[in-house]
Image (cartoon, rainbow, N blue to C red; front, side, top):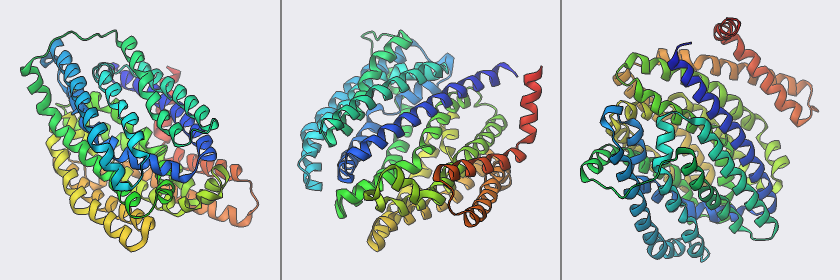
Length: 478
């Protein structure tokens, strides 16, 4: 194994370790909180985070991504100092804007007085996040994912414990607030300790312009992503109720529990890696298609569990009061199956220094498909209509993204099918066998059915991956 692949494999190992630990911890915390709290508590947090997450995107301004993408010879220490002080100053300004202007407006918009108290506290995460922009970029640029895994999981553990204690003490929705806040707060000293980097009072206009020139397009894409990710929350919270929004929030959380974390992990590892090999488009294409293959193999069984056993899962883990979550969760799981097929296509444009392409495609999809689909969906059939609207949008997005990938990177439908074939055929085979087995043996315990589904899926998929498995065995024996 050459040095490049060895470093990539090591980065993936630590990122996967982080994802597994973080997801188990998050799920454990959410299970406890869902038992102690009510759907409306999650709905209130959903209302607040719609706006907080939007401002959070503006907070970094794509500066961290720019530090990662820039080639070594074009980057100096002044870039890092300039980014740090720009990020901190900008976050303080945004915090004042949110606390004194947006918080009262949002509270009036939803007619929920408690939001006027919650939003200024949640907004502190922006200040903590700005302190970490440079440190996080340094670790990612150097592909030091072991330290990133330690920081993120340590923060998650401490924040989860604080949230559970507060929930037991009867703090209600505030336990969810501090679950978010404490995680950001704890990470600040950990990042400083990991990098040993300290800022100097240096800020240069030239370096700012160089960073901002790349970051403005990245920020534009993130803003559009944020609008697409939160427009459903905003509309449901406004037009229906916090209880329904809470049920929808849980449905979205369950379908993205694995997908979002794995995708985030892949993006963090592959962005600096793609940036290093950006001059070789064929090499970029090869790695991208491999990522799609293994990403789909990981995500498909998780979505299959939600589609086939979703009702039992929700009732056993969360209780009957979350029944409203079940059907939207199944539709969103199907949407994830579609979305995986062109996952992280925008990362390729960012990595080769063309973030404006990613932003234009995202603008097209958001304005022409996503927002109209959500609005029409909620008008026709509430949250069920919204989830069907999201599914249709993912289908449209697939064809648009695939056209762009074909035109710019030579990735054809045939290439994509070769990458997705193991996951798709494994899913279909597992679905048929599970249907037959559960019909002949209806009294199988729930956990046994889950294990059976996973065993069948990975047995079938291993048949498609026998060449890769043989290569790994030969490398191990050398």
